[in-house]
Picture 1 (cartoon, protein in one colour):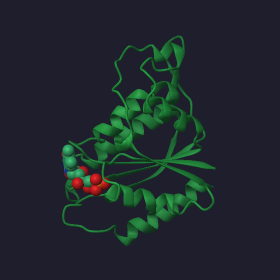
Picture 2 (cartoon, helix red, strand yellow):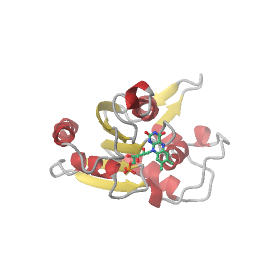
Picture 3 (cartoon, helix red, strand yellow):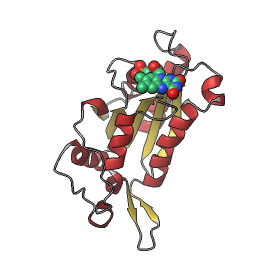
Length: 190
Ligand SMILES: Cc1cc2nc3c(=O)[nH]c(=O)nc-3n(C[C@H](O)[C@H](O)[C@H](O)COP(=O)(O)O)c2cc1C
């Protein structure tokens, strides 16, 4: 089983990375591939829509093309983002904008065709806003919704999420989140 982990935070040892590890380190003998989006060299999507006809991005070969292949090859996905301006990080969004044809196709009538049906996903998010305001002010919920939207149209089934609000004065990840991460790893593996 090939598991793709995508860290949407530029911090390689930050909150998102720690939570992603809490899931991916418990995946038994799965083949885990870790991507830090901040390390990728990706030009932004130009919106030409050519990829919708050809399935390939017209831009010169860069890490956007590599990520399209990574997604096609994975059996399960673990993705996480810090909340930036009430949404996923820019790095993460830029990457997903570039790999649309690797995520979904389109019928002649323009109806989306999910390309990853049957694959499972876990989503992770963190923010400095404290609970319950992360929820009331739709901080983590907006970021989670944005990630879910991409995964839904691509056919991935989100089997669970890990959310850590109030990171400003916190160090480390609470035990309840570590325990939930282990449960989600088991669910992903089944
Ligand atoms: C550019 C930027 C924008 C941010 N916007 C928000 C925000 O809208 N709401 C919030 O609660 N926290 C916001 N934060 C704080 C991060 O979400 C928070 O520090 C998060 O825990 C960082 O995760 P990391 O340690 O994995 O990088 C922002 C941080 C940065 C750098």
